[in-house]
Image (tube, rainbow, N blue to C red; front, side, top):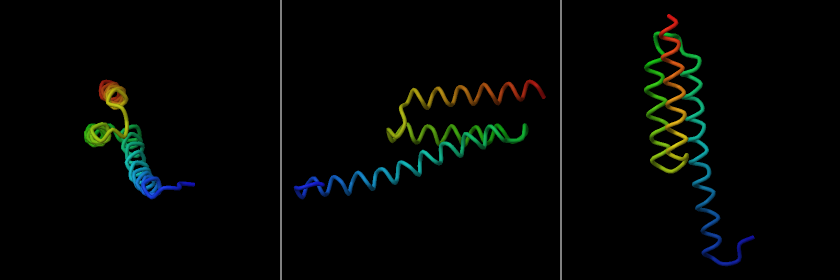
Length: 86
């Protein structure tokens, strides 16, 4: 348990940030799932939303920028493959 007042405040701040980050990470997972499960006609719009979500998370250092780039690339590849198969 924290002893100093600054350590106690740090615990509170970390708890708030963790809660906020958890929500954003959940949003990323949801956006990616929407792209994967989207119908062929709506997958481009779902991809756009997922890219936006990933970029925002990377900008806030919630996920690494290279991880965001990797996920965007793989999702785009998946959407393009589905569009070509159509």
